Length: 361
Image 1 (tube, rainbow, N blue to C red):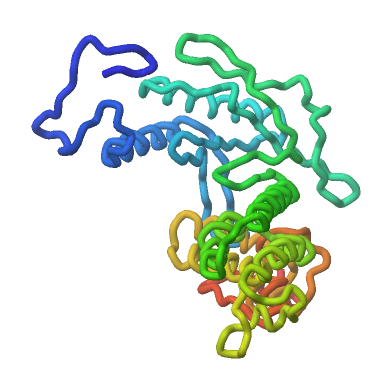
Image 2 (spheres, one colour):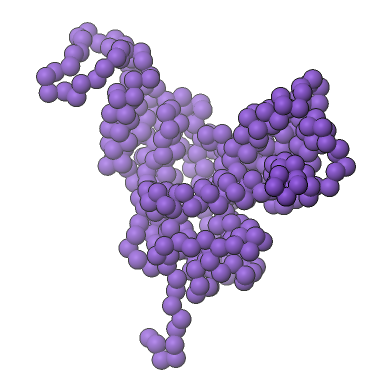
């Protein structure tokens, strides 16, 4: 067996009691049976050894515990500060979690690219009844160092909590700010329409390019984005001006006729604003219906949002009341779009606070 730790002096074989695995194994990353067995063992080991974060329901005992999220060779470690609620505790727990994962990767013959790693932290402080983000200057002497399998230490880059981190195709920011993600989609749109402007595609080829190449790339993150109408219009203007003339229509044509469905006499041209609504609502409903770990996370956050909203009616059912006191977020964005569409989402067994009566303890 040849790995980053060296080449073994003995070979391996499948014993009689082993789970039968087919296909070539050495140097093959597409053997899903081996990949699943190894990844599951690594994640379970890390989960048993490390502190993580806990999301608690606003009312019942539902919790979601998580130490790490991993996809192929990308991994995100999490830690909080349950005892002191302070940055020092969170950073110490985060370093422990990251070091354990680095040791697990090394034990399986891999190596972590420390120069590609970074760490971020959200620290809050109460000021005048509000909760504000604490700046790096309050804990600037704290750093995170990780050791490789030879004991050599590397300093891990610190990223501000306002900086976006490129995840799996999405620019993620710990604060939830999506300016970086929008800037990326806007740049992708500009590059795409520039290529279309100089192309010599016929109507059929133009339509296929729009549906199979341009829109999937630009709207990849739409299930979890909450771009404003103004931001979506900036994307739509670029796409409309580039593709509508190529499809044999006048760029001056009324947009209501361009976006309307065929059965109503329209051209059924895709609307960017409608696509974000469709993909966001579909993602929410599908995730909750599946009932997996993501559904638990959504239900917990929904209970917290419900409590913060002050409503005694389900958060996504009665969308007529404007909640100006709430900060922007994905769930609030869905609620606002549902109100605009005169729609609602019924979530089974969604928790709502009860009205208090005079004399209640």
